[in-house]
Length: 171
Image 1 (cartoon, rainbow, N blue to C red):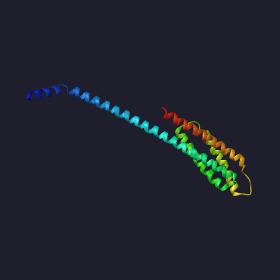
Image 2: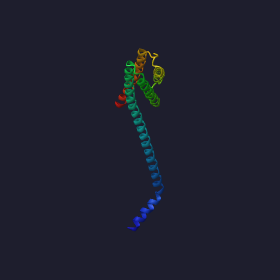
Image 3: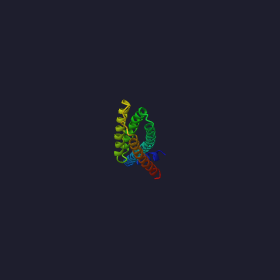
Image 4: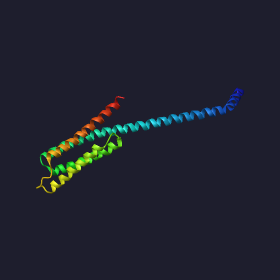
């Protein structure tokens, strides 16, 4: 019995280098597997982040279009002080959308920038109107048309974001 144990020990010593190389190979293989899993986890987290940002864009665009409709009502009823507050808020919302749009790298930001310029012009005219209520510096029909164009652009962007979300979920 002791001689069998000695033979096993002697045999193990003879193949010690083979066992060491085999163990080293298994270690490297396991490290590669862990690295691949970590990369897959990072990619999944990045994909989830992008999906959350797109969902946030959907909510933000819906909020902006609602604000535009409220603005139109305020202009029609000549409530310029409230319209000034709403335009300022809408300007901030669209600026945030532009930043999120740029981070998603989803097309040209030009129409967002145009919307910000148009809102700045409307805000300036509202400031003049509120400062001197006896003058009429605001063309209500033209302003409502500009707001409608901004709303149309936002709705187009909304449709594109929804399309990319449904396209990705069907894959």
